[in-house]
Image (cartoon, rainbow, N blue to C red):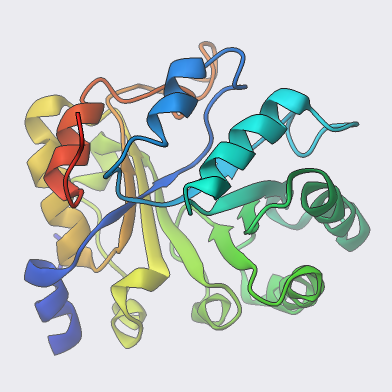
Length: 250
């Protein structure tokens, strides 16, 4: 059962203003409605991941450039997706992709997907982050662990994804005690398969566990056969925006 481990988190459980982190829609040509909805006035977005073609692609994509530009013009942070493949990707591969994201799409930071979690991999990830911050001093860096990593990772990223998975696991998940040493804005939860009737419960769990950024969707992951559950809008997009947003202009 989720629990609070500090007075800081006790305050967050009732007063924390949650925001949304979008882990990456399908290509703008395939999901024009989704990308369009992200610029809706009042949508409480912390960041949106841009994944052109399992990374930045081989050449600039004008459709992705346009989509990213609209978001950035709306003061919405755009993050380029970098795949660490749990430590199998080399330093050079990751940094090369990061350069292309910056050069082609002027991203505001990076989502390091499939980031390793072990203590032994931390020095190399620190080296990667040093290079990423060298591209832009104010780069926002999110580690896409999907589970609680060794605590030292919290010292070199702006945010950690400490849960990514199905609602059936999330509703019984527990928060690691060391997270109480950090404010909620350092943690993100990505949950798929959340039924509309359980949306309020999911929001309660996120606040209770001290996560400041969330993404909940009713889309399900069918063993990869129908693509990622993150590729399209949740069926209750309007409801989730109204529940956690500052107000929506219809």
